Length: 373
Image (tube, rainbow, N blue to C red; front, side):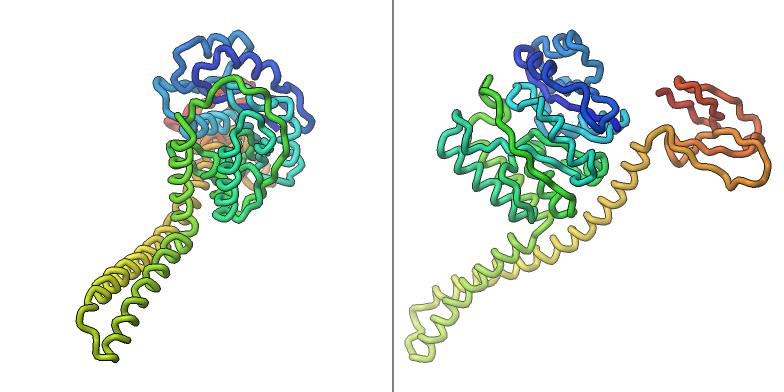
């Protein structure tokens, strides 16, 4: 089992050595631990420092692309290089890297698909009372949308299984944290929480300028996720409120009409009509959103199959039925990248054997190349 620890960085030359030195290299149940540095447009010596500490895996952005894009690109790289588990940490050393061992154990044991560290924000000294309250409110909103019970939905210190990453799709440009939880919850993935104690603060956050910007962007991401997975909560609730708001002035006007004093109360009809139109539009959008949700599910299922093919281990083989007494030679399968087909020696006329970096003898099909590992 291969574990990739990805470290998103933006000018982290001072704190990155602390992170890299504290990442455990041996973890029970894990065969190898690889470190991936995702450089999001750094202008300092982040890459040089990482190389000095033995890092060999890099994803580099020519300019700053944001945390969500860094996470997505890092995951793509890790899965393409055979990752079974991906841990996401941070280059500012706010997380205790030694706890990576505990973070991945539920996945190693097959008990969870996603494990999220609980920073216990109520105990973080440099968090203001307002920020602590907003963190709690934000987590509760995400839990309602995801059907989960996580104390710290905004934590970026988390572990994902390969199966979970294949099913999750990051579309936001701000932060993947809340979006992936809502997706994972609605896709019935198993999510666990692990209490941790964060390290001392090393710098201000570069993800947002202030708490208000963070609240606005997080709220936008949560609302989008609500519309994707639970449109009836947003559009159905809004339509119901407008429908009630329309009925009240209509009833009021009807009462005055029965009393013979309806003149002068036409404004009730105007307001009620406006609310009724708004309610009808909300319910119409709800129908459209529900149909789009169905279409999205079908598209995601197709995307999952494509990812499974893309990230299938190169050593996976398929065989012809045995028992015919013919010699077998390995051939590449054109429709399954990296897979081998053991076929009779004359199955592909004119094919010539080749050898991979691992010493395997394979016979490429026309137009195919031998994958190097």
